[in-house]
Image (cartoon, rainbow over all chains, first blue to last red):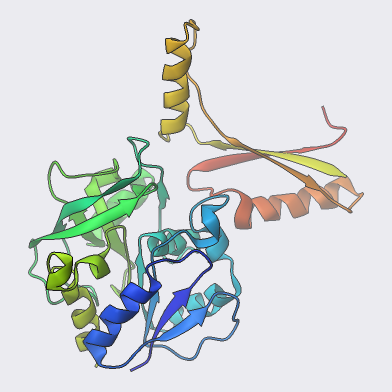
Length: 222
Length: 82
């Protein structure tokens, strides 16, 4: 199994996520630089959190148009599993692999705190080790996490069971539509989420609720 | 040829920054403001001199990068146009 972490200028969770992948699959992932136009064939591709290209223009918009993303989109369409965390989620919406957009937080503040999440869909490639409806605690850290899509898109996400995570009742940190914290594509192989599972993946970080995202995808792909 | 592109949020899309500006103006005593919406202005100098070709290229730029049409509208103005 080959896993790759895409590194953009301004990514800052790439090494954290690499530690989680390595712990789950006993092999370090490839770190792929944004300017590369070749990406070795990967079964799993992670778009990490951070501030790619300084969040210029719109969060994720520059990264979505970088050379490596053409490869990521091509491999995603051929069946690679893709996880976009925080800024990575923004990149996934900007490049069209996931619908909608992450707008500025409703309260205008950067929010960095633990959030309680409900695992709404445990049938995605990443969430099989969670129980359906399980409540977990995973931190968010973002200024643009306010998920927005038109009513038709929101209805489609609901009807097709493509909402992977929601913020638990009363714990929506950013004003996201339908309390959406993470969504997936129709196949469940491409997941984008604002919370950071890699920041809650070992006891020393305050808990292990995020760890099963990584062990889950490795199990699914092995 | 110089082009100016205005990018604005679509109607119905919440604009927290516009709302904050609206509140700040109210606190400064400016009355009679119904709504404030904030957008972006992008200026581009083009070597293209044919307005039609320029407009087509700029539309492509807006669709591919400059605007996110899920939430934003764009208007292209070429220098010399009213």
